[in-house]
Length: 356
Ligand code: IDC
Image (cartoon, rainbow, N blue to C red; front, side, top):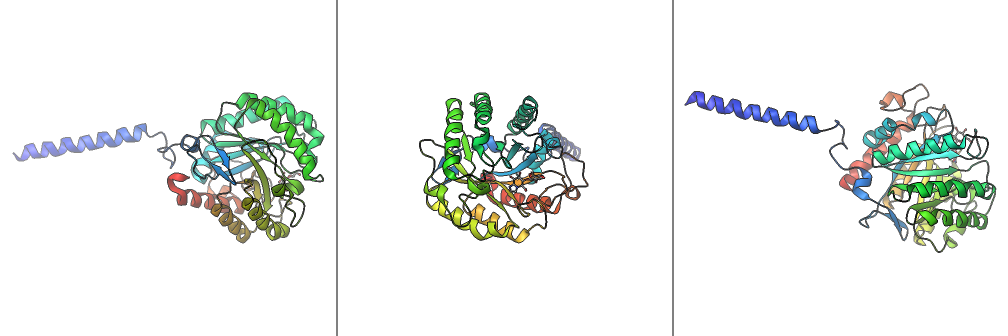
C-alpha cells in the first residue's frame, strides 16, 4: 500500500517535470513579450479619429518609439538591425521605430548619397520592424534644406516607390518632411498636397505625418497656430508633427500651449521626434522637463519618438559613446538619456498593461 503511494507520487512528480520542460521548450525566449502578442498583432491598422490616434478596434492608441540617427550616417546605420529593434521592443517597451533618412546632410538622399543603398536600408529596417510586429516611420529627414519644395520631385518619386511597396502593410507611417524651416505653412501645404496625393494613389489608408513650420513647432515662433487654424483638407489619417527638445527654453515655454490648442481644435498631433537635450543635440539633458512632457503626452495619448539611437558623443544620444554594441545593451551601454528613456518607456508599458 505504502509503496504504491510512493510510486504514485513519483509518477506525478515526473509528469510535473515533463510539463515544465515542455512549456520551457515551446517558449521561444525568456523575455516579457515572447509569451504575448506583438504590438501590431494586438492593435492592427491605426487611424486618426479627431485629435486622436486609434487602433483597429477604435481604442485610443499611443506609439512609443525610438528614432534612429541618420541611416546614412556611420553613427546611425549600424543600429538598423533586427536585434536592436527587438531590444527596443522587449527590453525598453517601445512599440515603434523611426527610420530617419536625411535628404541633405552627410551624403543624404538628395545630396550625393547612394539612393539605391539608402532605399535598401529602409527596406531592411521596415522588414525588421514588421517581423517584430512593430510600427515604423519612414522619415524624409529634411533639415538644412529647409524648404521641402526644394526636393519635391525626389520626394514624390521616393514616396511613390514606398507606397507601392507597402500599400498592403498595416504598420507603416510616412513622414513626408521632418522639420521644414525658413518657409511658411502655405508652402508646406503645397508640398504636402503633392506628396500626399502620390502616396494615396497607392496606399489609401496609412498614417501620414506632416512636418510643420519652424522645425515642426506647429506654426511659426511663439504663439502662432497657423497649422491648427488651417489644416490640410480632403484626406483622412493625416497627423501634424510637433518636435520638442526638453532643454530648450522656448520649446518648454511655448509648445505645451500650442499642443493644447491644436488638440482642442481636433488636430491630430504626433511627436515624431523629441530629445532630452537642447535643440543642438548637445549640452545638458533635462530630466525634469522631459518627465513633465511625457506626463503631458501620456495624459493626452499623444505618440512620441525619442532622438536618437546612436553612440555619437552628444547628450541626446541614447547609447554611451563608449559602447560599440549594436543591440542587447546593458545599463552601462546606455547614456544618461538612454537610461532615463528606457525607464520611462518601461514604466508606461507596465502602466498600460495589455493596452500597451
Ligand atoms: C542632429 C544630430 C547630429 C547631427 C545634426 C546634423 O543629432 O549628430 O550632426 O543633426 O545637422 C533636430 C533634427 C535632427 C537633429 C536634432 C539634434 O531633426 O536631425 O539631429 N534635432 O540637433 N531637430 C531638433 C533637434
